[in-house]
Length: 310
Length: 223
Ligand code: SF4
Ligand code: SF4
Figure 1 (cartoon, each protein chain N blue to C red):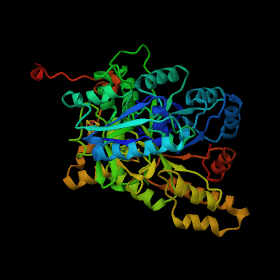
Figure 2: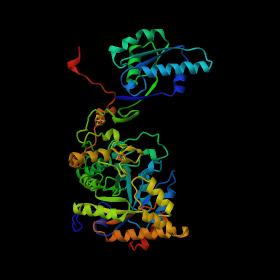
Figure 3: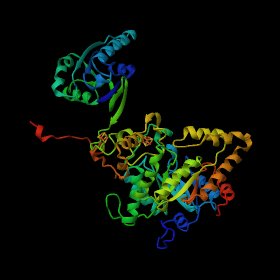
Figure 4: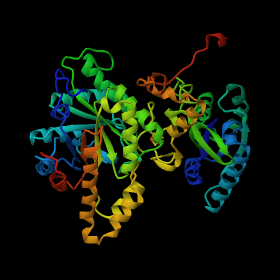
């Protein structure tokens, strides 16, 4: 991913921005629990002009929502570039590949390959899960389609999708030492960009990035640091205890609790802006991924106040 | 071993209610070891059923008890023939394979399951059982330090842990050990952590249940 290599043709707008060495800003849009496209249009209106691309979640937390492909298409129609999330929980390899072909034919150019939250978290824990392939296999599949023009069976595709491939990384999950090895493995499988879990524990994040840098990994992949503005001390505690793989240090929770209730939102905003400021200075970080699900109106403010020129 | 658990008494009562004479048939191997269907469980269940039907003042029900060594092997099944002949129904406390073996061997007798077959596993300590193998038909344990991610990772991940692993526990439930945490620990101990750098291609599930019902042919054993 050498930035000065002018021979690389960008696969998507997000890719182009990263190729140009600009600090990328991505956001997130959760499709509605229903067939109302207006919900997406409204969220798109709130995000437009502030971000480079928007992730569309794929039945996040195992709750049935409008499909990420449809959500992504609605975003394209609203003039935004989507990052289609795809989890391996609900579809086997046949359905996944078929949906990738369909998505590309609809103009979707970025994909984020994920395992997916286990269905026991959702509203239908009695569902059968699939997990035919894992997220790394999915990365490799999309990469192979792009590089060799073939599907998993080796069949030469008519028009092969050429997508910009992302994956998630959680520097805060255990076992810590292994997390960098895992990142390396994702890169080997074909990942172009990484969006991380929400960063509240900056010390641990820095340690992870340092290890990644030492392994030469930050030269091979674009890393976008994840942020989510906190609303209250209660939300911070809840996320820390209930959201899988989330690490919010005590001092952050205390800081949120130390201000009067009516100032908590502003305090959360400040923490978020401080995090972004540190990320901007951090060697090996190429952008920020702002996750303000069901709080999209906050994204514009974050971008403006963080001085992320858009 | 095959691990199973006796069905709730209420469900068993409903299933045997239409019959007059019931043979409760235990199995002396796996389900005995996991306290679901051995001789002792047959005896306890028989008493419970007799008592329950008596207090319900329903018409009388006759219960016969028998336990054979293994319901899944022809060699032992025959021992149940006489008892089956004397009764209207067989309530088998074997695993699903045993129940089906009985049904095949005695097509005229209705066979009811009295046990929920749950998994292939081991007894961690007295009274605690946990799953170890899903019989995928292509064992990869050599790569994973002897810990099976197909069975013990809640997402069957073969290329490493998901982002939900925390403090050694699986995101699904803090009472479940994260298989990948165990794998990494064990491989570190063995000095084989490098194993995990190897990309594992999509698993071929044809040898597992997705290839249809499986059959094993051992030419050398066929007489
Ligand atoms: S890899 Fe397959 S055969 Fe081996 S323990 Fe796991 S499920 Fe069983
Ligand atoms: S937490 Fe561990 S065991 Fe649970 S799904 Fe993730 S990797 Fe698998």
